[in-house]
Length: 101
Image (cartoon, rainbow, N blue to C red; front, side):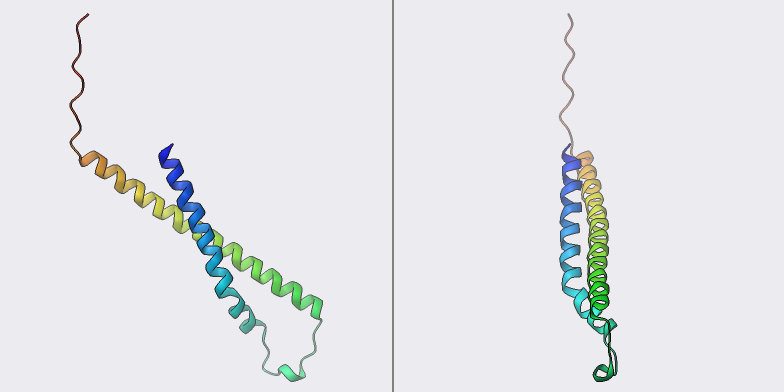
């Protein structure tokens, strides 16, 4: 149960961190991608542009969350494997002696 809790914490932390980073990085990328070289001569359908930009931002945040969750999962696996290998290296206490009945 402790391993599951560790995995869940790492995955959720990675998801939140990935979403946060995507929320910071995506707007500048979306602005660059949707800008035109002739901005003064451009006419557009504003509702369509708003819908497209919002969809792009939400898609970027979803991708960031997925990537963050994957990185968190890999980190959790590494921590679990390292903890298990350390537990095997420690000399354990001898098993209890059997009592004759």
